[in-house]
Amino acid sequence: MLGLSSLRFAALRSCPSATGCGGNTSPLADGGRVSFLVPEVDEDTAPPENVHKWRMVVAYDGTKFKGWQYQPSPPTIQCFLENALIRITKLDRKKLCLVGAGRTDTGVHAWGQVAHFTTPFAYDCLDSIHSAINGLLPPEIRVREISAARPEFHARTSTKSKIYHYKIYNEAIMDPFHNCYAYHSAYKLNPHAMRQAAKHFVGIHDFTSFANAAHNDRERSPIKKITRFDVTEMGPVLQLEVEGTGFLYRQVRNMVALLLQVGKEALPPDIVPVIIAERDRRELARVALSAPPHGLYLMSVNYDEEILKPPEGSPPISFGRTHQLSKCKVTFY
Image 1 (cartoon, helix red, strand yellow):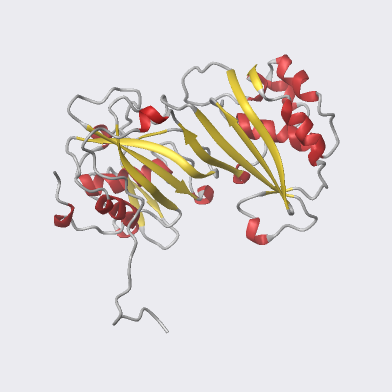
Image 2 (cartoon, helix red, strand yellow):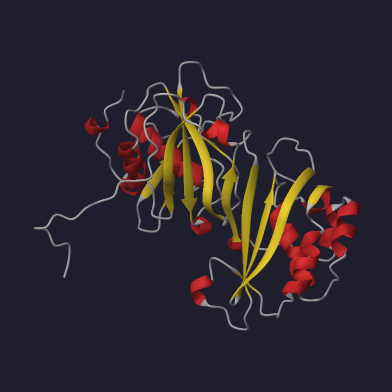
């Protein structure tokens, strides 16, 4: 076991060349710089035997980041997580094999992103590494949970379903506190028409018309199953919640874009099956532009309960340490 007490953690934002980091650096808002590794890691490569696998649930405000997926031109969520883990474990990227459940795009947020990584050693307690990771991450990224994972668990390929939210602020004047976290529609939307249209997405369909061409992704089947698509009024906010077995690149934002046109009553609700049947992205582009990323949230990634059961003898799940104040200490007046 690696003794965390023997390590000294320096914040990544103040480290120009962290141990194990490559030559690429990126400036941060406070004037510091952070270094990132350059070599690519094949996420589908099976980890070697006799390694321990760990599952993380990660939340982040995606406003300042270039999405989840690692790339040499940072910052990305995966880059920050990997560099924190490298500092703590003293392992390189290839041994960590960090994989996320979904490659959220630039500006997209998450509350329930799931990732896994591997180590050649075990931990008796996960609270220390949990605190260390969050201590090295910028405040916009937080690991909410860490647990031991079964060898067969894979953050992406073991997924049963994903839930996304898209928030629309539907008032004449935008609330500045929602500016980075909801799309502003000054047009008064018709939620009933949007619900009628959303029902047409439910089921198993070929969603070619709603998928942008991915730049560096593998070939994926356009056949996806949507189990529900709800439109909920929350005061001035319309929340669109969609659950499905999987989604193509920008599929959710493209579906939302069409629902916005229906909500503005520019298109009828039954336009949805017509666009689906065309199986041509150009047909959607004629009537709707992709919805912007800042209203989108990856809320949860769901798995079968059996595969989430930790291996026998694993340490308890860490949900973070709770701090207590001594009677003789006063933090501030």
